[in-house]
Length: 182
Image (cartoon, rainbow, N blue to C red; front, side, top):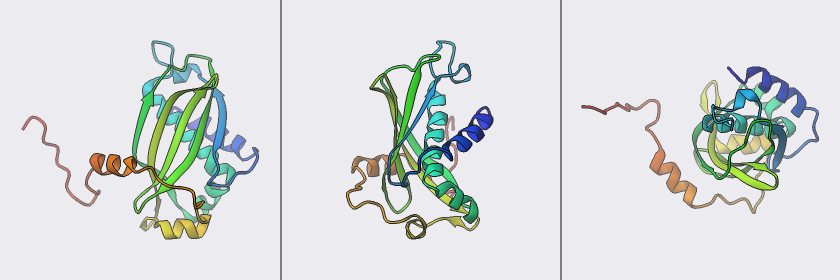
């Protein structure tokens, strides 16, 4: 909820920026606002993922995918994500959120996203996403039918398969009991 107004403004502005293919890289320039930082006056670790959401929205909006997803009643959801931090992004500092799709597998669309300031990567994340329709998950075949074939050179890094398998939880229709302290 804390980013609702910023998200809506961002979607409006992204619609006015130059168009991209969904397979292109998006760059969104912004700065660290007081609502983004913690007591140390740098972007809060949890806030990075929220700001990266806006980077993915920028790519989807500029490619026309966002509008088509709304028509189809498809919703993007994050299935898994990981991040590494190198340097802090400080209050009022300008930075860029770089976003691109790096591959697909049978269950997810994978994004690589970086926060770049002064020409250097400050944080890098990998996000596994799904598209959900009112009837359930949208297949890759259906996604490609709507949005086009990925470039032939697009190849998902092998380590992401292991990361996804090692961090996966059971599907929502299977039990996942919490057993701590038992």
